[in-house]
Structures are given as structure tokens and as C-alpha cells.
Image (cartoon, rainbow over all chains, first blue to last red; front, side, top):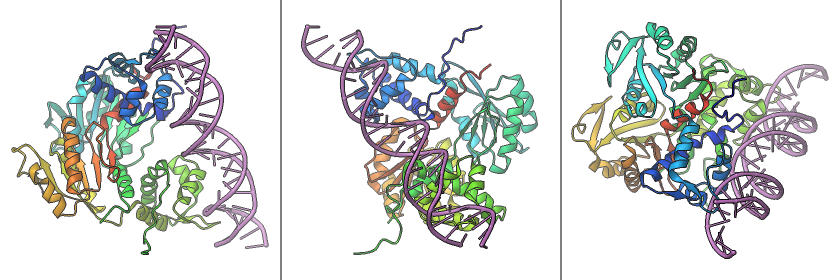
Length: 216
Length: 216
DNA sequence: TAGATTGTTAATCGATTAACAATC
DNA sequence: TAGATTGTTAATCGATTAACAATC
């Protein structure tokens, strides 16, 4: 029986997973500041959470600190990066070369972090053939072969909501493992496919609700 | 003592508030389909949640259904819109006219829904004076007076992370009530100011974590 | 060693689910 | 009326916080 090299971290609650990027972000800042060590107490205070929660969260993934000393900032930063999976390269395509798709394509930072964008796709002949930040816009008809041939693991959906489910189906059929959906609709994918939604309008509505009573 | 016209909905858990936009979205689709009534059972099934949770959630805001009948789709849709606060107009500005700022400015749908964008601001003289989707890009030095003079209630931050806190401070000083932050950093604002973060890189990291074990 | 701080268990708090009386 | 479905209370489940023994 082949032993799995990487821990699987099954059963880690979603609520904990969602906090990992925040830990990574704060530790990254401390690394930049060349801070060597930090206690759960101090880090938690910076992040406006409880030290208990911080230690409890880390406990899901292993032991990273030293009693009486705290955590080595650089080490913990690297460890959390590994837990998140940042040592891998993810090949990505964007479907929908409208404003949002092009804005994401221009966000070239992503590639530095291992999230590499290789193509945009659109149905509009006016856009096909154009170039965004050095990345070509291809016709949607080429989507399947491109994804299958280039080991694309993430598909980003930035099409209007009416087209989103169809695009998702095609991405899944072509073999992506994950979908990052910006269309304002809940698309359906098989259980084996990871789906992350970015419902911008939803956030704006939460903001609206919370503004109640604060308006002039 | 003046009676407040609008319910305050204090003490409604954040986790419930975050589900409101999803209810609104699904009900909107049913309205489009001209469906007249729906039971908590059926709506919950569509949304992939439990009927208990749906009824429990609505219960925080009032009674909207009829025993033995269910909910009138159009009515519930309107009610939830009101709860969210969509009957108000929110005046907005974007600070940071880079790719993301311009992409949001082009998303003209927002204005139809009562979220009206009146200006973009940037520090780059090359951008100042340009026009995005009919909305002018102004110099950042004009921010304070513009916000104060035009009853701007929401500031959208799409500047690099180093500049984000400074921009937030200026927006707050100028009088915005809420901030929608896209910079990948946790900015600090007074308790009275509503802050919604849109940390896109965080979502991508969650996607990365969840892809663990699924990669080739 | 003594002081500090972790890893981890136990206690508390809050959210979800189940159940059902009220009632359309 | 009988059947259906809500509003709401009680039971369960899960997440957060508190506490402390282990140990650097």
C-alpha cells in the first residue's frame, strides 16, 4: 500500500480553513518586518482574535511552536504556506474576457504565487485574438482542448450569470479540478470538483444591511 | 420620543445576515419564472440548505408565510429586499483606478440596484481626467470635498495594500459610513464604520487548500 | 531553576436541526 | 373539514473560550 506523502487534513472544519489565508497574511507582514518570534497571545491580538482560537486552529495541522518561547515567525509562515498548498503550481484559465475577466488577467501577482494564468476565453469575435497582459483571448470553442492539453486545474468564470452553468459544465468536462466562480449565481458541479464562489453583489448587500441606521 | 420607522434587527447573527443575499437571489429567479408560491421545504431544497434553517432565519425578521400555504414568492422577495436595505440609494466612490477599480466602475448593474457610483479617484496623473463608463477619474486630493459635498456613503478601496489604510482614513474623515475593501490587507476603522472585505487572494488560497489530493 | 507559553482537555456558548402545536 | 405548512420551542451539534498540565 502506497503511503501518502502529504497529510490529508480531512475533517478540518471549513471555518478553520477560511482563517488560514489570514494567518498567512499577517505572518507574511511579520516576516517582512524581520520579526523572529511571536507568541499566540501577541499574534492573536494583532489579528483581533483570541489566542485560544489561534492555538486551537493550528492544532488541527500539527505542532508548530515551542513552550515558553512561542512560534518562529518565518517557520510558521512557511508551514502555513505548505498547508494551504502554495508550493504547487496551479494552471488557470479565465472564461469571460469582459471587464472583470480582464481585470483579473491583469492582476499578474497571482502568477508569482503559483497561480498561473495561461489563457482567456470568450464568445465575442471582437475580443478573440486580443491580448491582455501578454495573455491571449481565445475562442470558447478551443476551451476543451486547451484545458485538457495544458494541465489546467482551475477555471475562473467571469461570464454573465445566464452562461455560467454552461461554462462550468464545459470546464468540468475538460478536466479542471476547481472552479472560481464570479458569476452571481450558484452553479452546480459534481462533488469531486471544488467550487469557490465570489459573489461580489452579495457582499455589497451585506454592507447595505449593516449600514441600516447609519444613513443620513 | 421619536419612534424609529425601521426595525433595527439588532442581535441578528452575522451568519444569518450573510445568507440574506442568497435568499434574495433565489427568490429573484423564482419571481422571473413567475412562480407564485413556494414552501420552505421546496425553497430550501433548491438552495441546498435545511427547511428548518430557512424558517429559523426568516423568523429573525418577522412572519412572512402562511400556515398550510407557504410563502408568496413576490412578497417574500420584496420583503427581503427591504430587510437588506435595497430601497435606499447608496452613493459610492472608488479609490484606485487601476484594473480592478475600472472593472468595478464598468459594472454598471450596481447603479440599477441603488448602488450609484459617482467618481473614481487616483494618484496617478496619467489616469486623472480619463473617463470610465461615463464616470470621471479625479485626483485623490479632491476626495475629501467630493465625499463630503455629494453625500457619499460608501467608499470602495482598490489601491495597493500599502496605500489602503491611508485611503481608508481619508474616506472616514470625509464622512463615508461604509467601506468595501479590495486591498489584500485588514484595514482599521472606527467601530461606527461598517467594513466589508473582499480578499480575493484569500479565496484563491482556500481553493488551493481544498484542491489538496485532487491534483495530478 | 523560574517564567513563559504551548498543546490540549473541559466548559461554555451559539448555530443548526428536529419536532410539533398553531393555524391557514 | 382534512391536509399542509408555518412559527417556534426543545434537542443536538459544533465552534469558541477558558483553563491548566506539560515543557521549553
